[in-house]
Length: 430
View: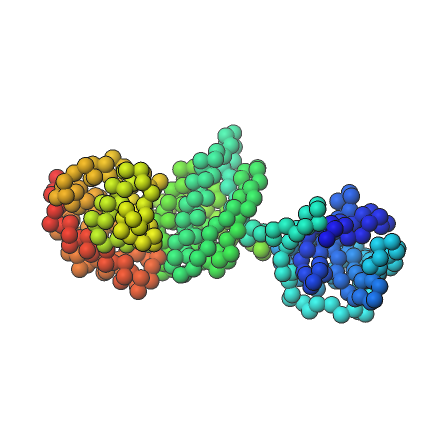
């Protein structure tokens, strides 16, 4: 189709901007003229020779609210920003002149309009060549970061911004895991100033009330520990977010772009107030992502060897299916044999250069000093791995991992129970 809706009208040439509803062809869409004036266009009827349309002037602000589905179609057609709008009867023959009428709000009583509460289906741009582009995804939320010291002359640096955003992403992922949901934070836009990043997270609205309640407790400097445990909030992810805010000297706000409501506020002062207690709690607590799911230690060792040779891990060189390869790479990271980028660490290199019995001694020491191993030892009240009872694994996770359901904990406890059985006999104290 052409990108021109109506040429050479009294308002200029009207070109398609974005389409919201299709029925064989665009039926509800926006247009603009040469100077950027915007209109929403709605199909109302047809006859043998022409289509009839409402053409309603609209501001950029209102149009964005329509596209974000915060204004329904009925309101878009009836709640006008100026006192009049237009009806045009556009002949199919472009050589014939369209017939224009000026209408007022009361004239809408003569037309059948969509019921209230119906929103647009999508936002699809029309390209300059008349082709349809990819649907536009609007952000659902935004994070606003600013320096905590109002008089600070230094600007936010990228490392600080990415650190806080990454830690919030980790917290969101832990909430999704606890709820058995899947989603991602997908950046959509960023604006300068202090720093505002808009992103899309469709499921985040499900956790808005939880985050509002946590924010209120933080603002009142009330007890957050009981709330964290009661709601199954991942203490590791929360601790890391608090630490990132303190270390970067920033204040953070999370706002919904769907409602405009402020959802979560974490100032540097607020994070600093709770950080000591939260860090202490996090030493005993474990997150779901810190629990390995790879029972066979020899296969963990093999993964490290494959990585050291510089080969991509495959079913051929690991003997594992693709999903299980991920689990074993993760287990190697838990033990410190691989770093976050899946590169072999110095202790990983030491492992693959050792004899089999020494490998198990190295693994025993690494399991003891891993976060999950040391948290288990502290929870059990023993001195080292050799004194740990493997059968306490499930009880430990039930008490100290609040981000997973009891059923999942029962399944996940199998790996650390097995590791403990195998490794405690190879443990040598310092």
